[in-house]
Amino acid sequence: MPWVVPSASGTRQMHILLIGAGGHGRAVLETLRDAGWPPPAGVLDDNPASAGLSGIPLLGPLAAAEALRQQGLEAAHVALGDNLRRQALGEWLASLGYALPVIRHPSAVVAGSARIGDGSVLLPRVVVGAAAEVGRHAILNTGCIVEHDSRLEDAVHIAPGAVLGGGVRIGATALVGLGAALKPGVAVGARAVVGVGAAVISDVAPGLCVGGTPAVPLR
Image 1 (cartoon, rainbow, N blue to C red):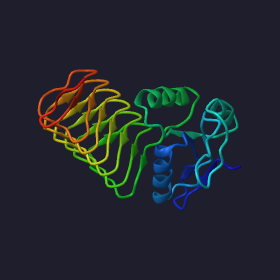
Image 2 (image 1 turned 180 degrees about the vertical axis):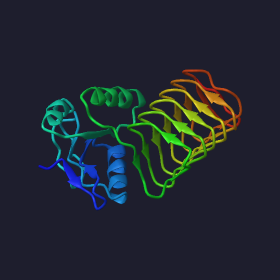
Image 3 (image 1 turned 135 degrees about the horizontal axis):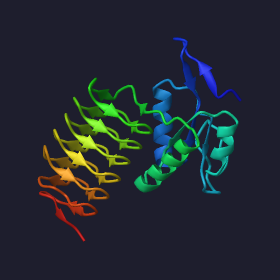
Image 4 (image 1 turned 60 degrees about the vertical axis):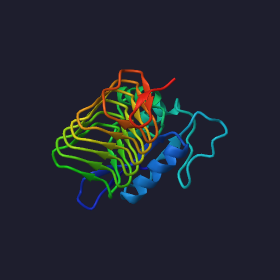
């Protein structure tokens, strides 16, 4: 199987290996197709009952990634919603020598001064503002907005419809839930969880789960 194909511009486009055949894997696969990527080389999943992803080969469990790299497969993406596991597997793949390209839906709007880290994915209608910085292995989910000068550390997940005002800071592996709104300048600590529809008007400590309007700590 050819892992690399030429593009019209003469640059190389890589057949990417996907990790994870669940719901997020399906979303990433559709994004790749919409963005005109070559068909993925396949998907790996540790679930023995997994049916894989439609239209691409199921190549076995995650441990097969090492052999596939030795066979010449060059790029991979971890399509898992679990932030900690996505980060750990992404760094493991990088240690094997895989490239971890950014996957961006063509409807996403990203400012020229914004920076997106390796292994991150931008799903449909995402907006990333001027001078925003997004770390490695992040999920910017459908329709979320990351405004100017915001800083997102590694392996965060900004859920569909969430809005981050200018200068917001999000710590590593934090989750901002569906439809949440964060006041400009607030900070959300590492591993924290912002609940669905929460209105965050003050800083959230690391590891804390908050929800409501305005957001308060939850059990």
